[in-house]
Image: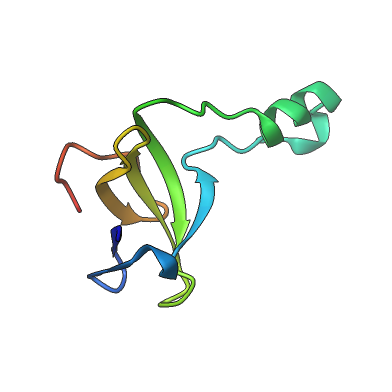
Length: 97
């Protein structure tokens, strides 16, 4: 069973308590009204889908209910770090995990 560290609850919990919420640190449009259809498509649907180290958003659905960011290796499924939403990218191995 995969255990995920919630940076708000400060404990590791089983993965079934969490929900994946997409790629983290997506730059939101500054002036959304100026985007054309192609730009909206790119913003809404195009993601890196990286093999290896990936920055993700997760939600502790069956716990505190809060969103947080995580650095996870998509090959090994290992979480390198978790940190509170709104903080800048981080994730040297072991940091915050």
